[in-house]
Image (cartoon, rainbow, N blue to C red; front, side, top):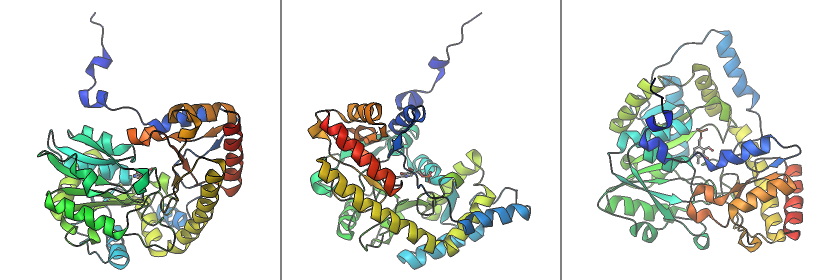
Length: 391
Ligand code: PLP
């Protein structure tokens, strides 16, 4: 009998991507006692009750079917209303909005819809782990563009320029940023808009942390920048702002041609997002803002505590202005970010993610999530201080 070699059968694209560097540490931490995790990129709040209740009520009334591929018109209409009042950008709910299974699916669909084999995609790093993988799986070539601590991890056209070739077709931006907590000011976005226009690029803008912006700032949607609406695919969702990670609802906004192309892939691979989760998302947009604001105020309190804490310990971090991560510089420890995360977990039972999981230029940093209680953050800071003293 011929021996079956499964490894050999795997597609070259799948073989070329690495498993997520975030998950590795969860798996080790899950087996240990007394671990404080600053590793998870997930709100520690439960979804507000009125949102949960709308799902329960939907089930009671027997809503258990498929929906339209693009998502319920009711939800698409609410998303359209939200973008109109929040950002002043109009999207037609019939043709320019697609409801997806999280931003994760939306990113995959966006890259598959617009990428031809060999297209180069500019990906500023450090960045969320899926951007590179989705690009590769879509047949594109991810081109890492390092951003720098001295620029507070913002992207500048002069950095992008160095990586531009005739094959460059698109750019993925993700602000407020995971893992750095960086945001882009309006003038930064305008500079990127000009760059995109000059070089005829599609911009994929992952705005999942948009509502988690601190210091009295309002989030800026990339498609609201002049001239950008038609060349931008905006991705957003409910996981972070409304503490709805498990509901798996996201969405994409774009011109009808691109949304139709993404819908084609979605209808064959996912069919639709779950109906009762879509009902909950409608409730989140209609009445969820007050709960969201409370959660954001709490993240803000934690943000200040953790920022001060790391500065005192001597692992300085620039002040995060969005999302719920801080990205301290740990080079003074003499350890690589991977060694640091491993030893910290082993010795002090604190889980963090090595900066290198988010791209080479994340080396020398760790990502800590402050989506956990003040008490846990304080205890984690004590343990990190103890760890530093004993290095
Ligand atoms: N984009 C960013 C920047 C994220 O941090 C995450 C999750 O951590 C996602 C997308 C995926 O979000 P979703 O739960 O909507 O799939």
